[in-house]
Length: 225
Image 1: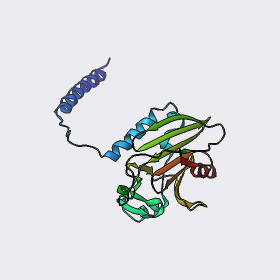
Image 2: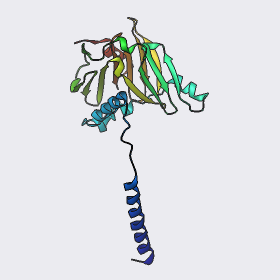
Image 3: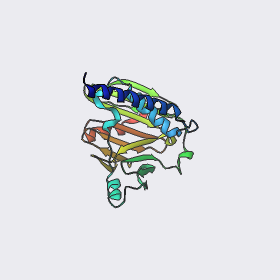
Image 4: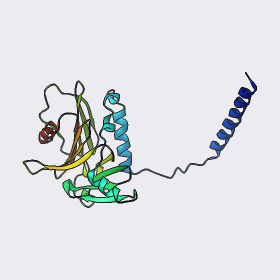
């Protein structure tokens, strides 16, 4: 070992020791608590990551969202936070510089159930799809279906529990009304399509890498169990 190597090793030992001493002096404010909605979202992401197929589809990581409205607003702003009331489906969009957050309109959530007392499901699945996961909590249900590399995520939420975040890149958002008058927000990426809607009592999401028409049919097949 040459002199430079000895010097480098000694320097690393000194720096590491001082860093350890500094870390021990830090005081962490343990009084801070994350909001209930934040904790629900994190728990949802953790559950997805625990699934054996997470590395295959990257779960919601592939459900990247970029709203056309968000891009237009951001192009005329200095990356500041904006709040936009979306008329479709009683959703409220908080638009930030790097992502968009969608929640139910806070003015209406208290008039609806705070727990799921009517469970919905997709009454008719495409041939070959099998349920591989079912996760029910007090105010949400997440069901996963697979057929080879194709997937379907079905999610049901109470209005006060609904929270979705989307990156503002490489995707589009549009509104759509079906023949029965049901309104949807539709998020499109190169990988999949996500339909979001409010049936007047609960909020639903269906995400799949099937074609858009097939995903819409899954929404229309969503019935009370």
